Amino acid sequence: MVKNTSIIDFPCWTDEKGSLVAVEAEDTIPFPIYRVYYIFDVGAKERRGFHSHLDLEQALVCVNGSVSILIEDDVASESVVLDDPTRALYVGPMVWREMYDFSDDAVLLVLASRHYEPSDYEKDHGRFQEKARAYFQQHESERR
Ligand code: T46
Image (cartoon, rainbow, N blue to C red):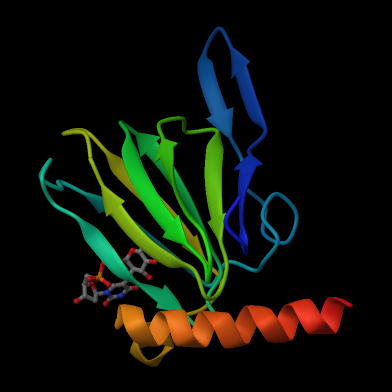
């Protein structure tokens, strides 16, 4: 997968009454939850995102309907379809993201590791590529 991303399967309890998913900070997801927001009523042709984050970690889960997420690191990109309320896409720092193909009924819930900070966004794709190259080179050399 693209660096700093993964799929997280949430535990789900299903019985004759229906299904329930519980998410616990620093357990089900690997960070404390400081903010929750959700995106809905997005037109089928709309595309959102177009940025990366410097420090923010997030878990994206489509709790209703479906949406596609393009994710990109310094060298690779891929698209992930979110259409299951028990599955989240973890997206860490220095990953470009674009959300598209929202179904009419899509509700994209996002759990975030920090409060809203406009200064944490990189919205210029060229600058993102430069920063991501430096960031992942440093992280890879630290791991050696
Ligand atoms: C991300 C993707 C998945 C706030 O005031 N507080 C908030 O916590 C957020 C997230 C947004 N806003 C305001 C800022 C804008 O005026 O809401 C408006 C729409 O936000 P934005 O254009 O950034 O939405 P997206 O869908 O492009 O991106 C959002 C998140 O901002 C971003 O962190 O990773 O969803």
